[in-house]
Amino acid sequence: MSAGLFLSLEGIDGAGKSSHIDALEALFKAAGRQVTRTREPGGTPLAETLRTLVLNEAMDPLTESLLVFAARRDHVVQVIEPALARGDVVLCDRFTDATFAYQGAGRGFDQAVLATLERWVQARDDAALLQPALTLWFDLPPEIAAERLAGARLPDKFESQPVEFFRRVASGYAARAAEAPRFARIDANRSREQVWAQVEAVLAERGLIGRHTR
Ligand SMILES: Nc1ncnc2c1ncn2[C@@H]1O[C@H](COP(=O)(O)OP(=O)(O)OP(=O)(O)O)[C@@H](O)[C@H]1O
Ligand SMILES: Cc1cn([C@H]2C[C@H](O)[C@@H](COP(=O)(O)O)O2)c(=O)[nH]c1=O
Image (tube, rainbow, N blue to C red; front, top):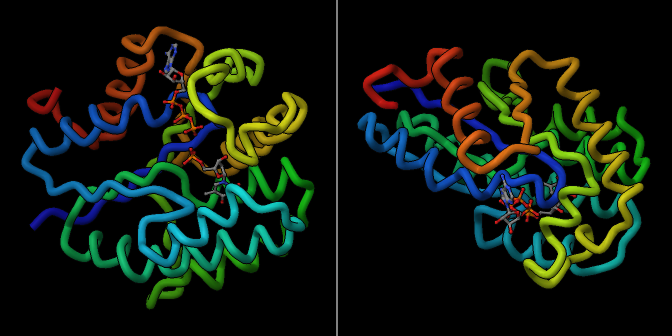
């Protein structure tokens, strides 16, 4: 049985993450892997209920942080850990880096409190923290992301924020990426084909796909 592999996709709203999840799933399936595809906030019935609240209701940043971590705990226990134990590739559209970027950098909430919640929620039996093996960070200037999203869909609470909010979120991702080698920056200000080529190149460089799966 293959070892489980946990991959997350991150970036500001409209950066283009979701546009590549189908292809990632197909790539790993073609290599004979079982894929669990999921998202945050969400991924379980309870976490999806919390997602609806977080994306639509006004609340203070501590409440928001507690709700995303509560959703994450349920998601980790019910979906992510069992999938990794089965040997699946877990493709997760956002994980805890989003909390540091949105609630931490974007909303200005205390990063030390977020780090404590991260330790509580992601603690494993061996005391290590559950973290993705690879985080694909789709980096796109906020002005371009706003242009791409304009008219694409009805904006939710976060998507309605001004461009300054997304500048802070983007700097939050950059700070997190500077600390964690699991991050791979993808220049998302390219055509879909060029973005996908970067994703494939990162997976190959990190030994996560072989030439036969490309
Ligand atoms: N490389 C690209 N060039 C131009 N437009 C793109 C590109 N990639 C995605 N788009 C378009 O930009 C919009 C946002 O893309 P997508 O939904 O994949 O972003 P996202 O990062 O998943 O956003 P969110 O986190 O808000 O769901 C979509 O309308 C999509 O078709
Ligand atoms: C995990 C997580 C997400 N968010 C925000 C980021 C996005 O604006 C939405 C999720 O929408 P998507 O279309 O599924 O990307 O939620 C957040 O603020 N904090 C988090 O921890």
